[in-house]
Image 1: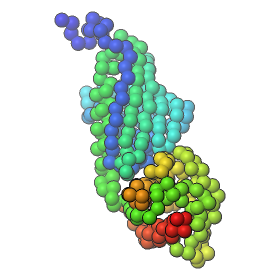
Image 2 (image 1 turned 90 degrees about the horizontal axis):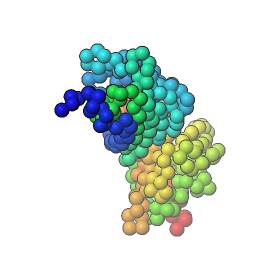
Image 3 (image 1 turned 45 degrees about the vertical axis):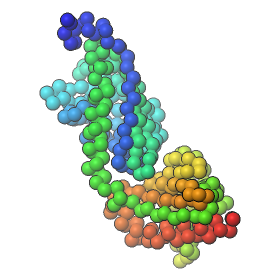
Image 4 (image 1 turned 180 degrees about the vertical axis):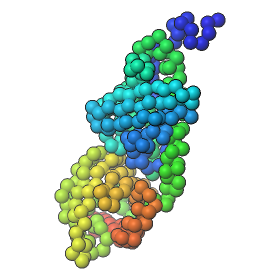
Length: 311
């Protein structure tokens, strides 16, 4: 019987392979995306179990290059790299992936797509990677491709759990049930002619500049306080599922991800507004500085009054 890594066995193994892996991470999508695009973070988890990354360089832009040198427990080094083809923050990454030897010769040539989907404050990650062998020993590398990526994602989960010890400590969650169908409540959140009539705490008004309700679109407005102070609000839509869900990023200050869900309850609508911050300290600062809890409740009370007028 031919031994493993023998030429005879290599002839029976494929020179191309595609692997798809799906994982749920208990962390917000923006944080998981950052773990893939920040070299300091990616160096902590990329590669198989017990491997390290003494070199991790990421130029995260279309056409930008990435380069990682993985070090095995026995000290052997394995360079890899590629070029970013597509970047849609925080939804999607597409990049080429090339495995090399220490002299820079290509061993594998492939393409990887990573999709980040928000699910109730967690992140569903789908990784689709394929590679083609370029040298005789490539089939053995392809054989371990799924195990290597699975171990990398295990390490990513551990890294994220230490970065996010308690998601609830970073969130503001406000829920209210409205006596209106969810199509109407959803429209009140997405029609600029409607939202300007109720959005904001008591005594506040808004001047709308832009409301492009689509993934990647922007919602920009100025909120005017009863004391004459103005507050610039910049949002970017990440996810639109009509009439069930809205997800958007708010920034630059304060910076958070907002998820608004609309649930049908016998013709009424149960709305949940979930605001997630990077740290518990940022959440507390917003609560104290902007009175965010009471402001959110007043905003939904004004929405209830607006919906009453529409019925």
